[in-house]
Length: 589
Image 1: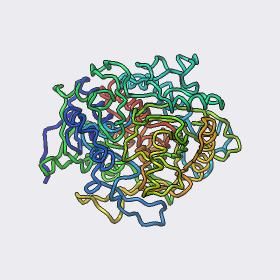
Image 2: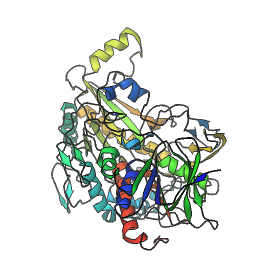
Image 3: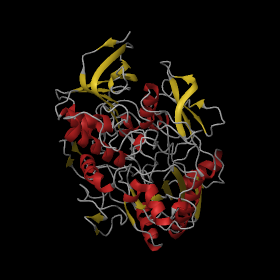
Image 4: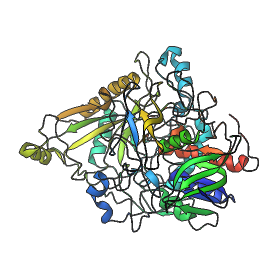
């Protein structure tokens, strides 16, 4: 029997970027906010402090900051005719766990979507005709425009102290920035990061080949900076320990330093760690949520009543909780009906290694999570798709994120993977090899989805989330075309050997790391038949349930998702504060 606790105004599931931000905004709007975080408490100091944090084995290979798959995992299969099996260890993606969530170990690569990304189906059909989108794809418009979201992208960049070079300032193109970006009302809060040799060479070669390179937008701060909440960030030290690590230098924007420290002592804020939400509770008529039931730090069940429920966990777990709680109709791939679990998408990555055989010294250990030079010319619809047989694209770039010794051993593909030949090749190529990355989009299809596994359960007896995913033919074609452009730039850089590797050339696997950019499953839109929530992230059938995160994406764009999902978060929170709180009800579709 669950113990019933005193009512709170807002109960928030998850203590990462979206959850802590929602608590900050709504607590200052006068609402009592209770955040339930599944993982433990942690902070930059002492938990994420160097030199202890610079333990590559502990954090990069043994995933100290990530989800424990012995307790929480999912099952996976490529196709519906296969039996899904539990993911026993982390690999392809690395969900976070603990205060700050995945926002603690992110790289800080901070992008906005292209305006056309947000009306994807309409854009392609209007420009290329109805046949441009294959029957395989279930892509759709988001229901919200770039212009509506722009102020919220801008504010989040200020929260992070984003470093970069504007390319489109109030409609005027600016040299050195991304010429394809949507118009921004303000420059970046901070100047871009200093570019090392490898990224500079990429930029020069890309420009010679007709591309338009620009410095990667970064949440690795480049000068002392105070954000709108009063958090103070410090200049990045280029230590090379961003992804998979926390930052004890207060140089990488994360939810703890940027938001939590500014709300932790507020009278309307309460954080409960080691608290796993079992389900969203509903009223007898099912039309509203009444709160949540969760297992607390002491192992006992508690019922937390609330006027509003905000689902702010990692996107996969938001979908899992909605399925367990019967929030929305589960997706059925046989009939293509239902909405929760629909349009799961990932990211389509490829790499092209450029070997210089000792001619240059790139010093890859002088690095940062978002240090790089990018070309956006084959992203989105920035290029002519006529006759190509696919939609979407991705950005190309050289990013110098780390040169850590265990993980960094770039050698030509024909090299033996052990012994004297391997060691000799590592010595030769470690400091004179760079990689061009294609960070590609992922288009939603009828056959890629999330649901509840009929066989396997978690440590609390609940069905595991089941993922069914493989790369669509559309994305395989996109990856091949765009990787060819990476090879062209690599050769223009003067590499002695240029070797591409396309992940999408074979079936998707959860084993090798790719990105943590899981999207979809609780997609937003304007039609209840094809979206789990409306354009404000509000559940169609329970108006006091709001969903946040990348699970809202109807398909995945070519960019890293954090900037987009946080723009959506501020969009939703602004609507809640300005409209919903005064008159709780279903908002416009």
